[in-house]
Image 1 (spheres, helix red, strand yellow):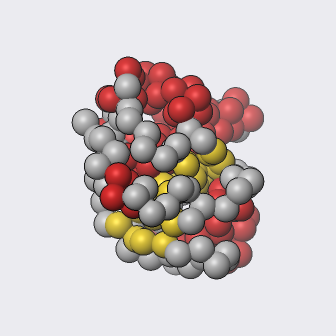
Image 2 (cartoon, one colour):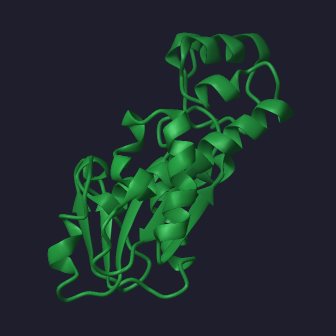
Length: 205
């Protein structure tokens, strides 16, 4: 599993290095969620944190156990949430950037360097950053952010499942599964659906 090998040389000169990742760019419904995590300088993972990895490779059970461990070990952490209505208004890329910046701005004290999963970032604050393709499988801080973002979003979608029954949000979390597409065909879209995400299978353009 991951270690803080990527962060160690950065900590030689910097105190606050922040990992950032998002969850929910691809779904047809629900928000996009980003998380930002700062670990103490020279942090070394122990216990369950030694099992941390890209959230997509971990079971839901392990992710749920990692969340409180990340909260306890981190110097600071925060999430940013951008809803479906805003995604439709400004597009998913800009909404993702907004969620990431919201998370960073909610940390309290500003980081000295941002480590961002992916290949694009548009900062709203004058903080240096690095984009890292597949960073959630390479960088401990980013992997921690990926777990917080995905867990937060899954919890939101599970709550929406009770508010909007019949779509199966608690099972697919808004992603375009066959079950979800069939539910949309039968019921139409609900309030949390992204209307700008068209379904060619349903003849939408």
